[in-house]
Image (cartoon, rainbow, N blue to C red; front, side, top):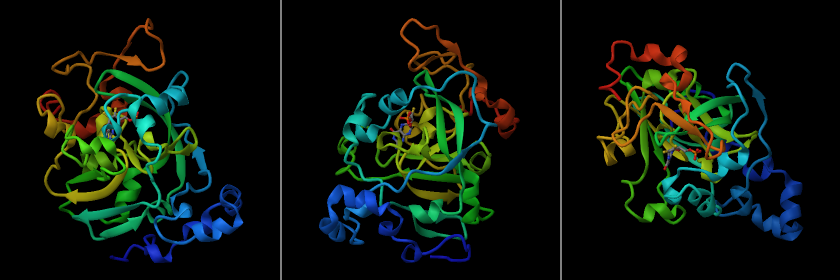
Length: 319
Ligand code: MTE
């Protein structure tokens, strides 16, 4: 592992999970004698798998959306996470035993700082903030979600991408034992996604670790997922284990699976219909069956922040 970036430390140097866990909680749950055994450092230990104390974050009022956010119940029970099944209720129903900790992320490709870093290494220097974003799925439903995280660009800069790093590729965990959906060939697993490097560095692109003030529930992509609010939801890849800087445009799962339906850029665009439905309007989840659909906005309402990234590009062709 390259150690030129002082904010990146070896896994062996970080505080072990048993020190940052709330010991009283662990003891309460397991009983004192069992606790001593459970606090072993092996990856299978209960302590290593338990969630850390509640996150500390500040609200970033610059990112808010008129009207109330979608209820926490809807955000955590109406999900797309094909690794856990196809129905909206499957991710919650089937991800209960998924273990998002311990976790590590591999950094690969065109960067100076490469290697495998624990989740704690990844998170340590970043202050967490809450941002309320509009979130628009390509299936024409939408939500408003208070995400918690930090700018993706701040993380990527720590790895010192080289001049050849024109794109960034993200990969989800491949583990059919924990992710039952990966036992069928719905997609070419693992799920992969990518961004152009300047898109990834845009301050709106968020590395998300929580929602509604809590660590991410498994069904929402624990422990680490992207949120790219001006793009269709499938770009916001969940449960990331690998970040690779590339010179060529990386592959992306939905584009591979149905290239005529899902592009690499996938910017929210009411003027470009999906081949099977209109993208002009959207249904706010939780709004009730008879509530009128609302207009979909170019770049999902974030044109002022991101439209310049695509100047000179034909947005119909580069869908
Ligand atoms: N990431 C992975 N690994 N697998 C998936 O199936 N679905 C995508 C995206 N990220 C998906 C994924 C789609 S289509 C959407 S709309 C969002 O996750 C849904 O995020 P949510 O369930 O937190 O609302």
